[in-house]
Image (cartoon, rainbow, N blue to C red; front, top):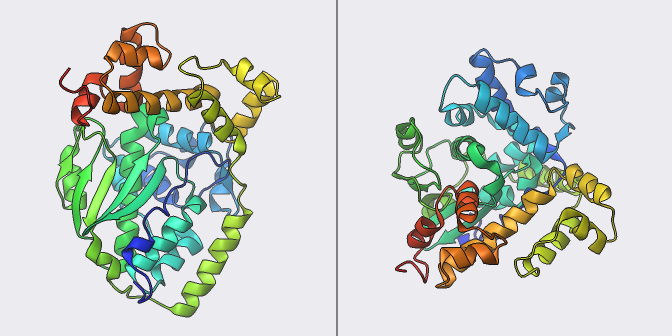
Length: 357
């Protein structure tokens, strides 16, 4: 890391939600390559997206979040290997990330590369909200806002973490000293492959999505550091980032209204009227961002339920009522779908105020 910066400068800069409408096709090449090696053509992976295969070679091509999730869903359905996400991420090449990858590799130190990467993560279109922080001597990549992925969460997680590990290895030309992988889902049949890939202990059903590694590596010099190349690539990344559409205020307005609804979440048409729109217009605008209304409501419900479970002594039945469920059984089923855990297990794992209740 350059002399006038510390690891603390990076903390809190890696926070980019998945609401943007334009997701670059950057970094998906490795997934297509892995599926091709399994005998699955690109056409099959793109089925249902409306994207032609020739767009895969267009540097200006973009897709919506919904289209990207459809690609992952197709991979999940068609793959002959359960560890397809780990295998695909390990195929990543620096060139797969375009100018973004070369900008990272030419940074002075690995810490500078991370800072640049988190600042421009929007260029590769995340489908999970991603954050980065440094806690003492440990650096942490963290994923949030993942409820809507459901059964695709393990695949998307494997591909993300495996891709980041591969990219970091390419930038450093050496392995990143991993310490721990924490995952919010049950161990899959290929759980042992995680530890082999990352070379560290793996905690499943951990209630968090995190990769921990030794923060000391942030100060390591990048072997291909080049200040001129780094500056040119960084400037290009800035221009590319400015060319992407700004995140809409629409999602923020909906979330705010839901948080203020005291558990009586407005129906789509009611929300549309409060925003001065028709229900059809609201649906169309959300679709353009790769989102849907129920998904946003469920994300608010998940956040509120998690807060009640960990910060209050309310019973599970009372928490369910606070987030709009008249039947506790329906709340339990929904919460497990959102988080992969039962409410009581989530409270116990996170040391909630009512854990002993």
